[in-house]
Length: 415
View 1 (cartoon, rainbow, N blue to C red):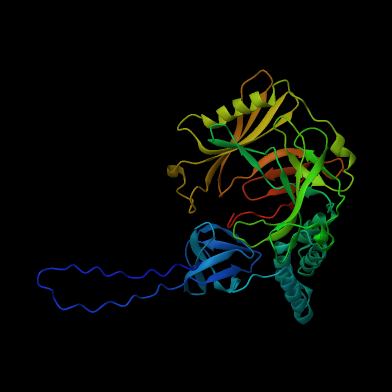
View 2 (view 1 turned 180 degrees about the vertical axis):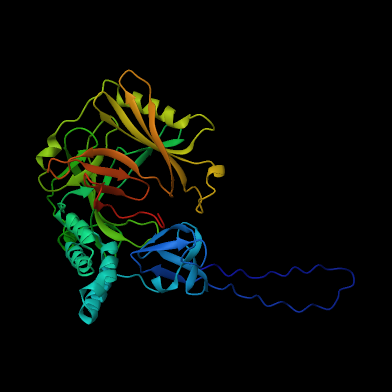
């Protein structure tokens, strides 16, 4: 950020006896706050220049920060969302780290000191593009070389995930009174196909499709939160900025489909979808719109003060509706939270057909955005349900055991 230089205006009052003119003060230019970029795969933002200080959040790789000062190997920075804190100065650089640069550095480290020494380099490369299969294979080998077989297997599990099945970027719609939002919108929706190093941002021309791995005659399907897969129409292919900090460009495909009754997609594919995508799902007796109204009321009016900053996720199950909701905790309950509005409550409800909403569980999380569950579905056709969740940053897919498989690009700074 470059703050404007404000000239100093000297106002001189006049009287009948005019005194000698005073010397005009010289304006001191404001000191520029240099911009630096995070080059760690994920960097802790702390409350003080101390590795043991409270963590305020985490900064994604290539997030830009304004440097405000330094002390003892730490830099005081302001993140893109305005939060001020301290980070290790060694993890900041004047330029963003490209995927090619991260790969080259990891390869140099492996050649100079062995595969185990390249682990941090491959972690950075995977943080830049977690869908690059070559990077993930090298990352698994690096974990193996360090003796961490468990993490190596977690990465290989991601490699076994079908690359053509893509999570749909998170979306939400506001309620009519604009006091709450519902996860999932009527579209159009966006799927991410791969990162690119540079723009221009905007729709791709047909002449550039091949260069970006796009075909003119693609057929797409989306798997909705409930019901079988539906054929989707391509609205456009484009290069988009996926992060509010301006650090992540990708080729995306924008899709639309008729899903109806508040439904929304969880995943999309341009390959023939697995048979599990054609499976039917439960149809509760209570209409979705009525269930939404009942669950919003349960989320909005607990014992005590009304909840604010509310978000609701709901889906059908046999004989009723399931929901998760989040709300901003009152300031008095955020004493352990250092980032504004990051104290959240999350609750889980069951709404049986013909009955009232029941709060089954609740918990506190100290995050900017609470991750809410979406319906579990068999995305890859292996007969087991994947766990799907979304928040204000990303849509995430985990296997039946909770291990990470895929996610969309993080959309915010310091989530």
